[in-house]
Amino acid sequence: MRFIVPILIIIFLSVQPYSAFSANSSTKKNSTSSKAKASSSKKKGTSTKSTTPSLNKNDPFPRAAASYLVQVDGKTVWSHNADNRLPIASITKIMTALLVLENCQLDEIVTAGKSVQQETGTRLGLRPGDKMTVRDLLSAALIKSACDACVALADHVGGSETEFVKMMNKRVSELGLLNTHFQNAAGHDNIENYSTANDVAALAKTALKNPIFAGTVSITSKTITTVSGNRKFLLKNTNEMFERVEGIKGVKTGYTPQAGKCLVSLAERNGTDVLLVLLNSPRRWETADKMLEKALAAAAIKTAQR
Image 1 (cartoon, rainbow, N blue to C red):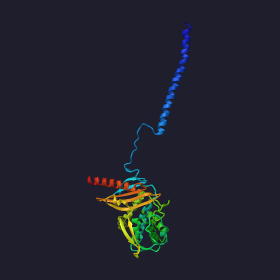
Image 2: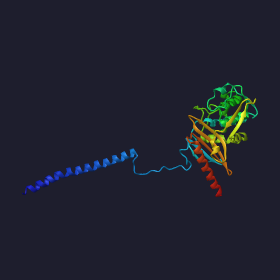
Image 3: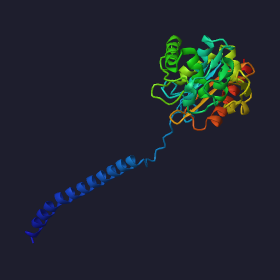
Image 4: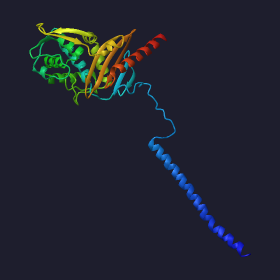
């Protein structure tokens, strides 16, 4: 009997380390398993912690457009990617009109050349040999967004569209528009025809200082004719904002497959001016409506508190 007790003690001590090791291993395995599950949850995005993205107060409409800008009385209040270079489609016609106004008299006669037949996109329907005044072709370019009217004016001012485009880019440099370049007079898709929301806003404000430009872009419809009177053209403004927001004063619409739907819109109400630039906005009319009304309402509240 006296030999049995020591033997039992020896057996107990020899088994104990193994048990401890097994318990340790089990704990490590469970710990590893828990870490793996946590890692897997993170990868799958199933974390129980809720994350709320912080919104930029200067970007209340982050999904409104690829790029946008809102200015109230000349001061930028909201923006999104406003320095990103993007195609601007027929917003290009603002520069075309500005150059024409700076280099021509409104009553000058323009004779359409063969190049008008090669123009794509929105067209007035000019034929080679048609004679029209600069005033009426400007109306066609800014109200109807007629590309053939643009090329006829470019040929008249520059001698050719190629030379006119050189004039456009020289004017870009003079205006200090560092992120803008033009390749054609109408705004057709081309890797070398681009601008930014900030530059477009600056260009629009320069053009709007000209009373002829400002007056033309605020017209909703107009009839123009060739000099002979044999052909008449009804122009209907492409800008739907006239029907959506009170106080719209223009300015220009644009669309191409690469540029998407673009808009430069100016609204004036109770002495407050709001300028909006949208570049590639899938729902530009609804979006512009909300943005302009929000900006005008905020301005009205601020005015009332003074």
